Image (tube, rainbow, N blue to C red; front, side):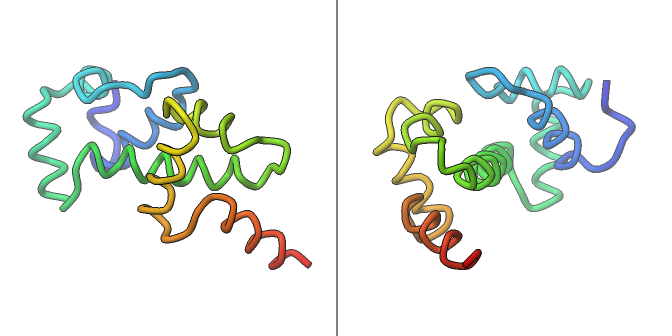
Length: 114
């Protein structure tokens, strides 16, 4: 479907952007949508110095930051929307990605807008 357009990372992000249901699509599912084998996708991503896991984590981080902008979204709701079983697991992942907790990110964003 996408095999002739852009680099592999861009193609995967386009698929993830259009995906609004849980769980996130698996590597085999995404490879099939792009129209390549899993091994070809892995090789092309390796050539681009990345991996499917890294791309999905970056996508989740970006989506989390967008969802955190809306103060009406609770941390638990965001965690569940991103496929985490609970908020502590999401908080741990978010802190690993950004160095701060989601709560601290919200506080900084709020203070920056004042």
